[in-house]
Length: 223
Image (cartoon, rainbow, N blue to C red; front, side, top):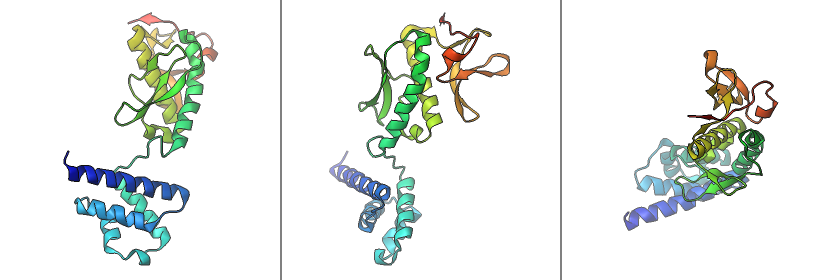
């Protein structure tokens, strides 16, 4: 990477963070939006919103309009605030873990698992640390963008845990006792469920409610 490219990336990262935080706080500084647009324009990243900000006199752009332009620029360049700049995403994921953790005793797993932000991944995502210290991050990690919706976060977390346990133990979990098939985390009709493909497909249970599913006790079945 050249020094010029490194400088550009550092400048745009600093400015996108400032614009994002300004938008969140309702205190957007138009100078930050203009500076970001100019950086992008100079590197030929000339979306309609970038060009409009560069070409207009910022003092003549109403605050509401500048806010819209700032959001468009962040969207156009694929900016994602991650967990650090959008901490509510991490709280959504922690709430999802509390739900899926209710199913873990059916797999013989005890103790309170924790969400672990995986700084060593690119982009940064999240995995799960079990009470025994085992890190679960297969089939993932869960991306911050998945945590804008609680159901999506719960589904993604269920899949990550399931695939990680499968790789660790080579045992299918959960299992539909009626069809003797392994089920999978899936989002169906707005809910996160354990989905069985038997007989055209059906929900074995909602994620977090495996122990409440009468007559369908989970069994460990080798692959």
